[in-house]
Image (cartoon, rainbow over all chains, first blue to last red; front, top):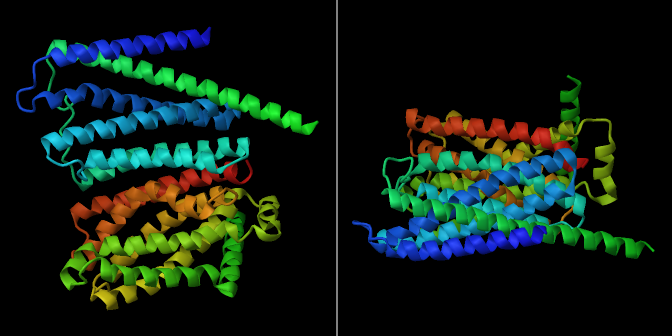
Length: 224
Length: 226
């Protein structure tokens, strides 16, 4: 039953993204930047989804350390992995936009650098997991690292902001604004991206759970 | 009071063990010199350009050489199950951790104190111009390096690819602290005193040290005992 809900949600999210992508392509080009401006409909939702997932990973990690229930560990790894993929999508779309508007693929601007550092931090989380065999130790150390990583993110963001900044200010909180029908499409994409993330994380979560079940069965088989 | 005595005992034990074998400190020193040599090929060692990027270069040397010291910190306890004995000893894990941090801090600082004059001679950098301020920055940056490094040295001691995992996990976390230390060091070496603009970075360094010292002390029991 749970699987069916997850797949239905995934299908719905995919349909919304497909339809919305078409609708966005029909919108007029932005005056100064042209068609490439529309990448914001994907660039920002994936970034926000990645941030939400990083926060969920922190909560799951703390809950694991308190309760020692492996469900929270499975949740932490699921959302971290999916969040990392979304952050990668954010970096790639940003890079494409930068090539068009700035003429360069990458610049060591504050937001770009912070995003890259965050990506490296959470990639480190996954590398750490791969290096540890014993499940309890893996879950504990990974949770500890996740807490360190999350605490580091605001410090990284602020310090790099002091360093320098070139990234365009956020459209929503920084003064600029969307026409109303553009906001609607943005909102659809936002919801669809979060839904897609949730679906992917749910699939990863059940994989982790099955993996643990297989491991414990295998251990039982070896014990006899 | 008792706690500080326990910290002192662990730190003294670590320093004694290291000074008798000198395995980590010798390797770190030699490594620091090799990197300093490599830098002379990486860029034109002109006085002006070197000074502008001297903070960055120095802290790359410190971070790389420091990692060698930090890697040994807990790995040294593995033969004869010394680590298990230390954990079973009647001291809190925080004391064990802080003792090791203190010992590592002094060892890394010693490596830095040798690299600094060598750097000054090789690249004509007048690092003594604002010595007390520079020492403050070096101490704060090194504390950040050792607090995070020792914690992850404990975390990675039993895992595969230990030597690679330690820098891979710690450097991204250390980015803000290293950035601040690099900026301040470059300024000080170029003869600029710490003004209102760079004081932000000094505060960042102090804040970073305070936050991560507290978090590490809080979480170290989870890592060592489980």
